[in-house]
Image (cartoon, rainbow, N blue to C red; front, side, top):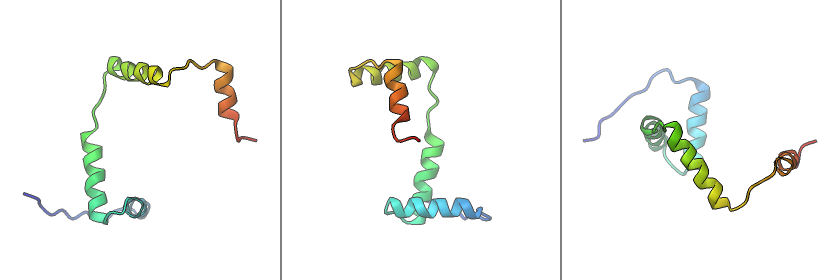
Length: 80
């Protein structure tokens, strides 16, 4: 059964970020607060092995190995 929660003394910058996120996601402030709390409290901590397996899977899905020079050039694109 849902319950009510009152949060007091929210810092101004946090309130503004929550408000902006709610507007961006077309949610009410309450809805955005619930989604944000849920995300923060349900994050899973991955083991190093699981994290590396995810990295390997991403690399395989890209289908290309990048050379150091290619990576450096890509990082510099748009920089002055």
